[in-house]
Image (cartoon, rainbow, N blue to C red):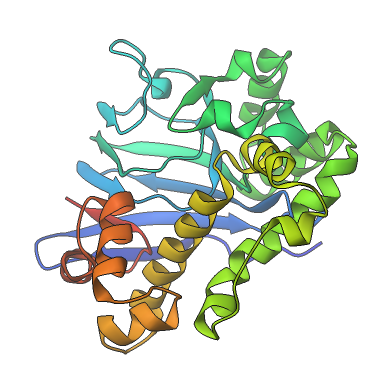
Length: 288
């Protein structure tokens, strides 16, 4: 069982603000394809952050104070999910903004297929939405007691990995969804070399059946799933590659610069150039 280096301190830096955050990361190998990491973050400084769509859903455990403000999810006028110890933050397709004076949060970064495979919830029901812990766990009090009983992050993470592993629902479509999930992350490579992508060719189902499968397991239609993955890969590239934005657009399957700007603005509510100016050293997250 592999555990990543823990108790890291990183700086989220832009030209106006430096924020000190303590972070721990654990890789849950038993949940491969379902969850990519279990993480914990702490900060004692007042901050406001914007988080761009990441293609993941997040299971959040609030170990500290609730956030002062949360916007970007359709959670209703009176529902702040951070008031709860636990909530499931669904697939979001627009920026999520949050304000807090301090925080101590633990979370599980989940692939979209986790909504149905762990909680028996079609992923489209979680699009731009959040659910309270009691809506996803029948024994939420037991989960809270167990997590709070561990003072060490690694012990909490190991327990949570085992608990979620026991929740996995065997479903014939799950294995197909896991294969498609890998394909979606490679779709920019297919488009870059001019290969047309028809996802129904990979599912073996009709176009309509493929559409239903995508809504259930990925929360979006096939075309929106592809464009979201293109957006995510381009955000990563802005941090890791030293190319012009025009070159980057072609490298990630966009037809031209205007297509790149349109898709980027659809998910980030800003242009790639504006993101480049405001980015921190955390991919898809920056103080605002």
